[in-house]
Image 1: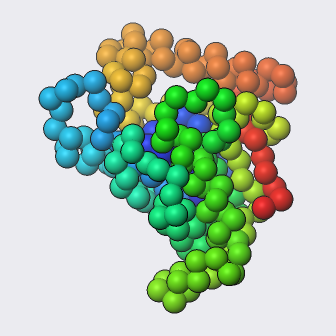
Image 2: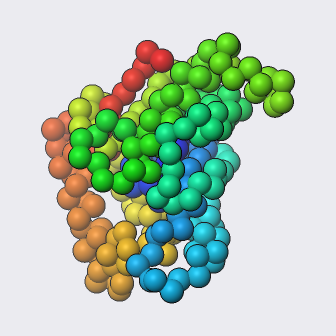
Image 3: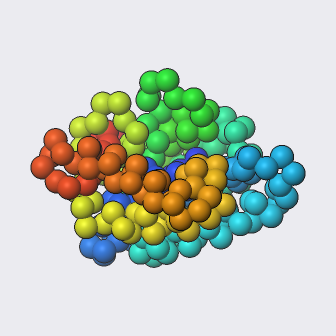
Length: 233
């Protein structure tokens, strides 16, 4: 059982899409949890924000399907750009961990240096703190009272975008699956992927291929995603 937790729709696909496609193909049940509504994901000042939020949820579900994920896709609904490192967010993420009971959790590395986006930092911090809360029977006892779930300790936490990676996943056979999932996020072609036509999309793909190849080269594989692995949780 796997739970991938991203700040925005598309963050999971960027951070670990190839890994999730690989694990899904091996039979793992992969769940997605998205912390914010993605409402800032456009350069258009006149955008219909309600429509954008709805579109991004559809896109995220489609991306999960493209990866072969068969688990739930859930949204906490915090306003994009305003996610805080908070007790409430920790509580809600811990509840998801106790409910889903993942063996592995994946999320943003909150200790990445010079990170600009606060949602990425705070998602990582909330996830790390939620794992501590979820594993201990004396934390958040109302989860048992209100939801009938008990404490759960994942076996491992994988943090993407890590400055100090100590684990890689060979995704050589799943690069296309990662692209297929990323391209379900159609609202992000212009803003995140900087691709407004097929030529621009091919530039984006090539940039990503180069990145994955560079990450794989030290490990002797054609393409990789890298993480900081924590397995004493």
